[in-house]
Image (cartoon, rainbow, N blue to C red; front, side):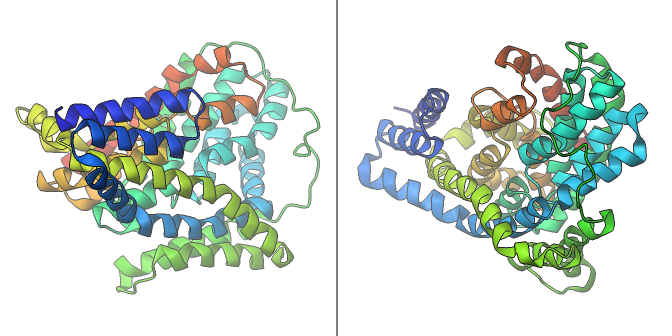
Length: 416
């Protein structure tokens, strides 16, 4: 059987198993094994390709686990919530959609997972939204859209793995998508949210502590940790001083604990960060395995041949591969891992720079990462009490946000 078809069958099998609630890492392992065997490579070669795929993303996995220190510190100390509350208070209920989108964007940009960012902001959004009479669907798109904008400029796993597989610096990939992220924020708030049907009104969160005065750290203390991480990462392009994300991100987390006066919560923060990052690391092992099979197959050649007649065929390979893989896995991280591990060589071979390829692929992995067979769909719907049917109605608008980010990332990377 043609190796491209065999790899696609293996990927399709993995998707079906994930939809059937099989743990994703095992579904991806079985899909990879099936794809290799159907290609006629035999057990030994198939396993070797799977292991090679995992080996290629091991450096990214290590950095992602290290990033858990910053994530844990932001959430456990209350810094993430403090950032959101400060923005919402500053902008007020009249600008609630902008406030929510900006809050989610900043939280994700500082390294908080998008689902954690939405869950953190949701109780505040429900409380203020109920007072302002804001419809729940519009509140959700504000949070999700803002989160997607922040995700493409963050030291989150998707950005780390894209930079790693393209052989470029994390801070360069983050910086490359700043303008698309800001444009995406504006489009989300002023163009996409008005399109969202009103639906039911928001209901005030039950048993939420967010409406009460909590002992949260100050806004400036809350952003100090992420700012330190960004400054450390920026030392390389500015002064030629190399500080790896493996050091910079944990340093930002520890500084956050120190500045917020929550040093006693260090162990709790480390445990929380590890708890959040461990499932991602395990998932990446599975995605690395199937990426190894895809990389060894002829899928790259098929896509390159199909795009060869286009004037911008090489440039289109990055967003197309990102969109397809994030749709297959319903995950920004998994999609970015498989797409960058499998297609980075072909994208670079087409003359695309490492930074441009990584940035555009990263942006494209936000287009369909919210499909129902992924955890993000269920986590965001569940935190506000949405039914599956109600949550499904948001998919077209989430997709519009992702497409906006991808289109403007493409324009910025290749036309300017």
